[in-house]
Image 1 (tube, rainbow, N blue to C red):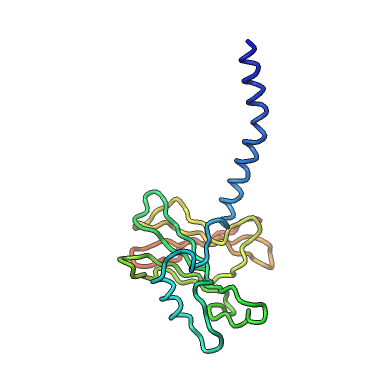
Image 2: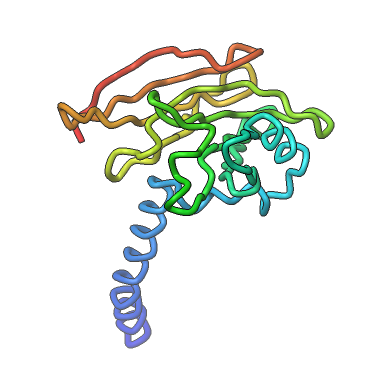
Length: 184
């Protein structure tokens, strides 16, 4: 009887800690911030070199290693997908010189690898600032032609709503599939 009471007290004492851990993990996963790494740290030299050549500009020297990359690998997926946020961490005075950003937003590109050669499968311009409590990019559980469909969350400045753009892989590249609007 005494052992049963002690076990119940221990479980009650641990419950708030377990809830705190669970809530912290789900928040980090929803925001997706913990998976992005600088390209230089990702150990993908072929991809870094490819991006360096693609976005080099005479206006400012570019260090593609300062771009961020997200590796997506889910159950049922045939190979990893490398999504690259092409914004380079620049000094404040140089922010307007980012060669991958323009009036339509900043380039988000994605690649698959075949024997250290990277094939671009997505290139889209997006507002790089995600809506509150949303990740910019969320892979879905839907796998199409070996790769996951991707949801891009975009802010609608005038209405405050969130526009979710879904793109799926057609076997050669990602194609726009649908758009929906959600309340923030």
